[in-house]
Amino acid sequence: MYACESYKGMYSSLRPPHVERHYAIETIRVLVSSLDAYVTRHSVDRMDFLKIDVEGGELDVVNGGSCALSSLRPIIQCEFSDRRTKAWDRRAREVGDAIAAFDYVWFEPVKSGLVQHTLRETYDYDDLLAVPREKIGMLEWLIVS
Image (tube, rainbow, N blue to C red; front, side, top):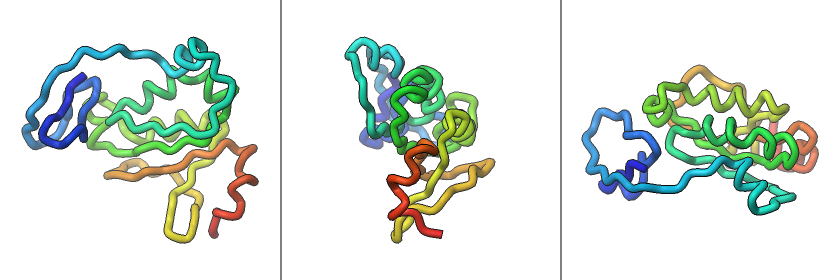
């Protein structure tokens, strides 16, 4: 793992940061597992909420968690930032499309609740919420037009 010491973890990831500034980086050996392997190993049978914020590697979490997303159907909070996904040679939108393919609907938190979010081509920085279509009714009271 490439730990960016100067920014208290921001930009720390399994890939060196792809940004214009120079960061003091320490390389740390870490164990890595997929979401599906973790769920299986620990016999997880319920997952209400999943936060994905891995500094650009979000698509790898989704790809390694397809069984969990299909069967456990958590609500997902996910960071979108092209600046961070650039080190992975990806766009942030790719994770949005991948999660939407599991029949999730994207929402954007606003002061008054949640508004449905249409995926854009580029993202500076956003935290979005993906809700399984069948669970939207549970959050109906938060959704604003």
